[in-house]
Length: 168
Length: 121
Image (cartoon, rainbow over all chains, first blue to last red; front, top):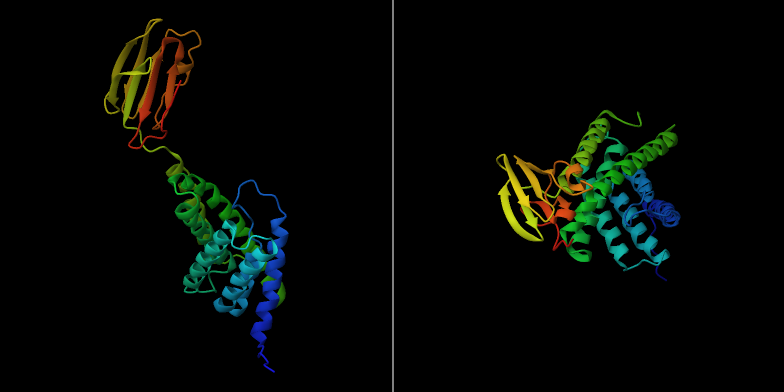
């Protein structure tokens, strides 16, 4: 019999991913005025994991939540899935770069805003290259950027609050 | 530890600046370079938006006067009954159009890139 060794980190990642997936599904029920504009609540979980356990585990949670979340809402391999995956990948790259910023001065709010912008940036670029091969896509960028800023700040604050409550 | 840290405020401020700046940057039709005056759809004059000038266009109702200034143009007067094109005021963006339909005159600003494939009126 083969027994997979399950580490504490594995269990953590699974638990956090489950929470992130639950938020993704809850969010799928929220009506949105414009495709692509979403609060991105699952990113709160990614930010918490990033702050507590580092980038590697945050990346696991983020990718698992995109994969499993899309399976559960029936979007796997649909255009929305690739947009989400590209956005999540761009956000993770930016978060990795942002690790150079000291946590003492730059908390989850900074990381949340940067990730939110990377998210829409990646999605818009993929949409431009693949779905809407016309520069007209860029007309939507100011709207997406506005929402990214608002939700980025809110998600960052929620994550900071969760972290503060846990450590208290 | 504070929820919003010192660097966070800096990032928020920068993000606000980026978002606000993205609106004019991405939403204008590019700077207007020339004004095209048409009568019955045929071009009667095309002028750069660099110097002041007045253009008189004789239409079926009378004379429509177009005023051109650096960077902008407008219909100064028109014999039409409702004066819509006059009330529109200064046009300054590429692809902006003022149409004096009763007198068959239109004034359009054009930039480097055309905003529409074609316009019919």
